[in-house]
Amino acid sequence: MKKVFLGALALTFGAVGFAQNISDVNQTGATNWADVNQVLSHTGATQDSYIKQDGKNNVALVDQLSRGHDSDIYQLGKRNFADVTQKGYGGSESDIDSRGNDNGAVVYQDGHEEKSEIDQRGNNNYADVKQTNRMHDSKITQVGHRNVADVDQDGGYPYNGVNLSDINQRGNDNWAKVDQKKNRNDSDVDQLGNDNGSNVMQDGSKNESTVYQKGKRNWSDVSQTGPAASSSDTDHNVSSVRQYGNDNGSMVLQNGFEHMSTVFQKGNSNWSNVSQTGNNHMSTVSQIGNGNGANVIQTGSYQVNPI
Image (tube, rainbow, N blue to C red; front, side, top):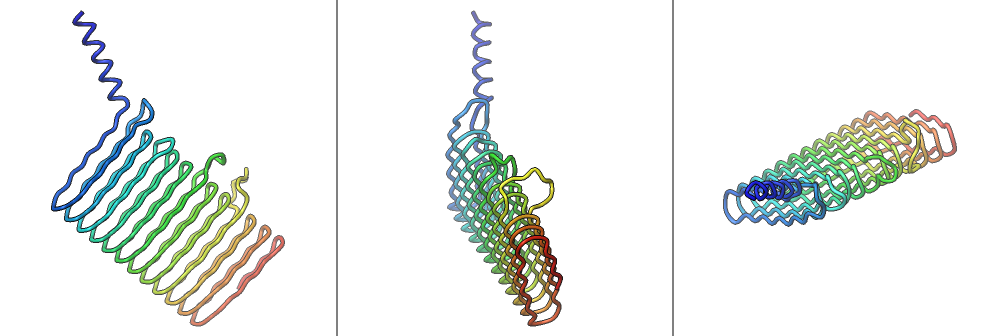
């Protein structure tokens, strides 16, 4: 009888260990607050939350409402705020690291195998990530003060793809917004300096956008729309914007598939506008100096325009 009882007890603990919630909170300083809510909806999965706060008046909130999610929050300084919500099918990961004062980070994941990484250094920075459906990947790095990053990724199933976003901002008062729908879109935004702004909208499949801005008060707006899915291995639309200097502006609109746009501007107060609709267009704009302007409009098929 004793052997039977011990065997049953071992099986019970084994089942509990196989599906469980795990929460670890470590706080050092004064008047820090952590709130963790874990609801495990399926057996055979583990939800894991780790919070470490060092300083004063920091707040961390975690809601895990399904299975297999992982959240890590580390905040160092004063009055930092982090809010993570994870639900859906499961397997999502969120990592928030804020060091400084008055930084904020909000992550909402509702789907399957979403990944979000936020790294902030400085004061008054804010990052917001929303991921729905499945298998999206977002990375935000902000170093400086009063920088803002906003990422919205929606889509994936039934297209069997992922959306990728990488925002890197170093300086003060920069902002970047990335909105991705459908699947396998790729956005990379790098801003170095102050008061730069970037907006990227991708709707469709296999759109690729790269934005690099260095200086002050530069802005870029990229909009790419195309088919939802394709068996082709090539990118539907490709845009590259590189701006060096101050007060430069670039707008790129690509509607269709297999367009390519390259914008290079170096100097001050340059601007360019590129609009491509249809399919298989190519545009190159290169401007060096001050006060230059370029306007490119391509419709139909197979147009090539170098400036």
